Image (cartoon, rainbow, N blue to C red; front, side, top):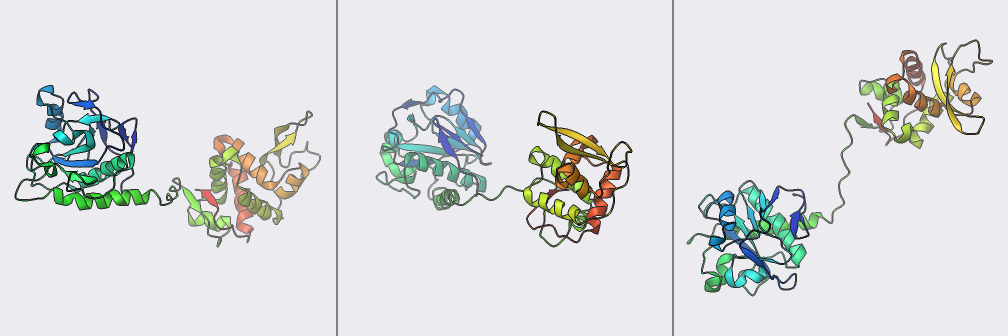
Length: 347
């Protein structure tokens, strides 16, 4: 069902095609509607024409006619004036107590409302009902509250057959469906919102594969998945469950790293503040060259997942370079540790 509309400062707002009259409000009208306790409901009208012509008529003071809303065959809503006290000149004696909705009919009231018109009318009726506290039900007498029709007012309302053309009652008999949809819109507001769709390239683990196999099943490599996941994460940090998984995998791998890998890590500066540093494996100026990566992490007082995320974040293009990527892919291809279920990774 379409999204719910609401009244804000007299204007209908929400996820719909809505325009507002210029001038605002239209010249045919006055102030004096008793909101909300004097409002009986809303009245269905038919244009015997289409929306552009109706806008022209309602903006001509010589016609002395208007409505609060007009709805065209595509479901577009045009608002002629505010609903927080402005009176449209639509039902004569009923003007001060009823809102009014005109529906385009291409000049023939026997043309039924289109599906788009029915939905748009339901959205307007539901919003007005919520704002002015009248029930979502049919009104067939001026003493009843709800969704009425122009002809129910008889001579006091101008003696019109609107919204129908006798002897047929096409449009007035579409009110039950309009009200059904209005009720569905109101019911839907109490349902929990569905979760937003995951961003493009987002994948969720099910707990049956390790990272190498999970990446391969999505036609990427483990290192690429880790670099993209780090790039998308807040501050480039992996979520705790993924960080623990990475540390576990590297903690069980015993293969030595090749020379000339460049790793980034945090070390404390003389002032005690963390500073970004690099470690180049196999360089002679290092007094030690701890092996494998988990041993290096212990040596520099950090952990493997932090080195992995910082290297991903600070490498050119925020992606592991060839040698580092090959080493990471090898570590995960050798591991039998499964990814926990429910992790969100990027591919």
